[in-house]
Each structure stands twice: as C-alpha cells, then as structure tokens.
Image 1 (cartoon, each protein chain N blue to C red):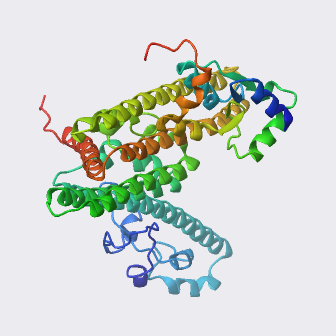
Image 2 (image 1 turned 60 degrees about the horizontal axis):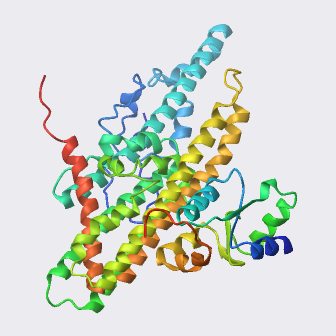
Image 3 (image 1 turned 180 degrees about the horizontal axis):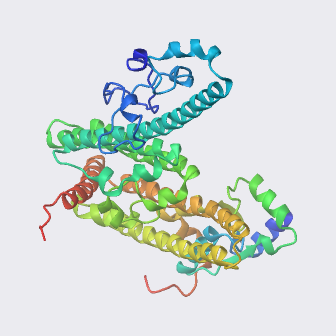
Length: 366
Length: 105
C-alpha cells in the first residue's frame, strides 16, 4: 500500500458559512482494515481526508500480489491460458477493490456529515449546560443527509441559527437586567431579534423548494417543539398567549390592540387550517384513484402538482408568523418588545430542553 | 382586462379563484368567518380563464390566485389579505359588506 494514501491533505467539507466551529479529526487510513469488511461501524465515525489521486493508484493493484510484482516478468515463459487466467483474476480483484472503495467512501461521507451534526449538538449542549438530544432522538440526518443536500444544508444552517439565537438571548437578558440600558440600545436588540426570525423564514422558504414534506414534518426541531407544531412551525396564536402575561403593565389601548390581534390571528389560523384539511382530502383522493392496477405514475404525477399548493401553505404560515411578530412589536414599547422577545426565546429554549431531559431520563430496568 | 373590472365593480368582495386551489378556499373561509358573502369567481370554469390568469399576473398577483377585490379595488393575494387582517385594516374595508356576523362581537 502506498503511504501517501494515508497522509494526504486534501479536504472535502460541506460548505458552511461559519468554518472553524469544528476541528477535523485526523486518523490513519482505515483502507487496509476495510479490505475484508464492507461495513463501516457507524458508531465510531471519523473524518478521513481522502486524496483524489487514490482512484488511479488502486486501479492496477491486485490485493494479495504485493511483493510479488516481479512475477510478471516471468509471464512470457508461462503457458498462455494460465497467463489469461491470471490477468482475468487480476481484473476481477481490481474491480472488486474499486467497488469496495466506492462503498467505503460513501460510508465516510455520511459518517462525516453525522459527526459534524453531533459536534454541533455538543457545542450547543455545552452552552446550555445540558445534553440536547435532537440529533439522536430523531436521527434527521439519516433521512435527510443521505438523500437531499438542500435539506442537509438547511439542518446545518439551522444549527447555526439556534446557536446565534442563544447568544442573542444571553446578550438581551444582560441588557434588560442592567439599569443602564436605554431604549436606543434595546431597539437595536429588538430589530436584530426580529430580523433573526426573518432569516429563519427565508431559510425555510429555500428548503421548501427542495422538500416541502420535510418542512411539514418538523424534523429539524426537537420532539418537544414538534408537539406544538402547526404547518411547519409554531402557532402564531400560541405566541400571543405565551407573551401576554410577561408584557404587563399594558395601557388600555395596548390591551385592546393585542386583543384584536389575537382574534384576527386566530381567524387567519383557522382559515389556513381548513384550507390544509381540504388539501389533505384532495391529495389523498388523487393518490387513491384507481388503486390495484399496478401503474402509479398518472396518480403520483397529479399528486405532485398539489405539492406546489402545500409549499404555498407553508409559506403562508411563515408569513403569518412574521406578520404577527411585526404587529406585536408595533403595538408595544421598545422595552416591552425586548422583554417579549426574551420571553419568547426562553420559551423555545425550554421546549428544546424538555425534549433532551425526557430522552436522557434514567430508564427503569425491567 | 374588462371582465375582471366588471365582475369586481358589480360585487362588494370578489375572490378570483381556482376550484383546485386550497389556498383560495382558505381565503374564502376567512371572509365567511368575518361575515362576508364573497363572490367567488372560479377562473378554471371560465372560458376566458387563461386571459384572466394572465391579466391577474400582470396586475402583480403571485399565484395568480387567489386575487381579492374589495369595493372594486384590487387588494392583492393571500399575503396582502393576511397582513391587512392582522393590522386591523381588513375589518374597516369589509364593513359595508358584512352581514349576520358570527358569535363574536
């Protein structure tokens, strides 16, 4: 085996806006270990730096004949059929070697993505002081990462988004607790916080184009958050119910405005929910047409057109979330809006913690 | 396009829709819950449907359905209707067309 295969330095990483969050783990090549074993143990993933020259170097190497290369010099004197048989065996061995290498590289790629996600989870957990389980309790990467790079990108970006969210909340908490913070500074926090939510909605819109069912499943969120899920995210009306007690004292006008907002938000939500029910029926009926004939292309083809409608609903739900946040911040004073944003952020942090505490609770031995 | 203008001016609240569009259905439900009997014009059942669709797109409606007219004026699509409702403006606009409101005040 060629030693340069073991120490190559070319790196393949999933592109990320924030490089440097994780350090690649350098390992000796497991290529030799892999010779007789096609399955890479997924519980011990590692990042291997794969040299693209690897392809050419293994082409002509026949495993088992290393150290016997001078045997070929004697081929001319051997009977032709033995020569042909040896050449055929070499070709076969080389072909098998290439297939094994291909499978190995694929395993490495998915292990690498999984490791990146786990490292992100750990980073977040260390920040929050507890172990989060969202990567483990749902294994979203096993669904998304191996099937859809757009979704894998979204999950990575969402991980960054949550980290940034936690940072902003910590800063906001400090600012609110300090007596010296004025409205001008708080305004910056509020605008920044609202913009951060807008960033999330934009990310989701991009992801919806690659896989709208994924967004509907909420698989990038923790299981606790999914319990409260409504068309791709949190319920806007729930938002108001959570925030209201923490915004006191309110003026009468504010109370009135917030009440009207709560009512219109609920009405908009109900309308979208009923539209979704109708979409369920139509989509289900389209798929269920003429079952039993074996051929599914016409029905599935018709159903795919309905998925555009579904993407519009997810977009509409996000628009409703965004508008609700904007309206709330218009009704409130800067300081109230800052307190509201902090309360909202902590609410979601608690939901995330709920999931991880639940999944890491000590199980009773039966 | 004159047909759009005609239908819009002859009726209080008009929703240009498609029978298969569930978002259009959602907007209809919203107006119904607000006590408005909106006129729903399904362009996929209209022989001039394609023309209407092109005209609505030119007018800026993304979708292009649902396209909502109130009092002869184009309000926009679902986004605009939702924004108007959350800001409280939609209720003002539909007041002349509301009748037998549901249980809330």
